[in-house]
Image (tube, rainbow, N blue to C red; front, side, top):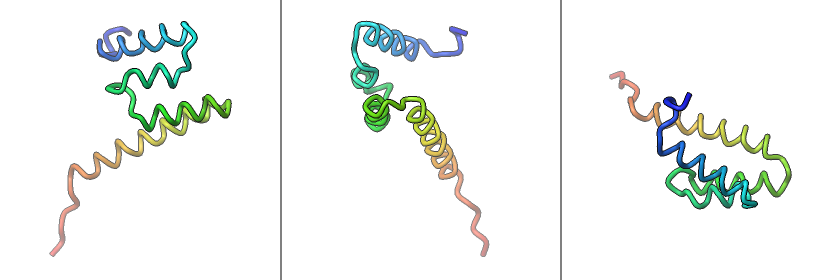
Amino acid sequence: MAGIVPLSKRNAFATLSEKVKGGMDLSGAMALLPKDFAPFVVQMVRVGEVNGDLERTFAWVLNYLKWDLLKDESQTFPDPVVA
């Protein structure tokens, strides 16, 4: 399983784990890693922490990221123009 996750991401997850085990909020730990976690995602996690519904927040973020990925892929190949 370790070979599936790139080393940089493993290091990021290790940092998150260390910070959270040390008492930091997950969103605060994520904010320390701006190359790995976009500010939008950090803010959404912060909202989930505050409202006590991280599970729903993670599901929403996952759906948003999937949509964003598909949106970007659809812009890679323009639709053919019919004359």
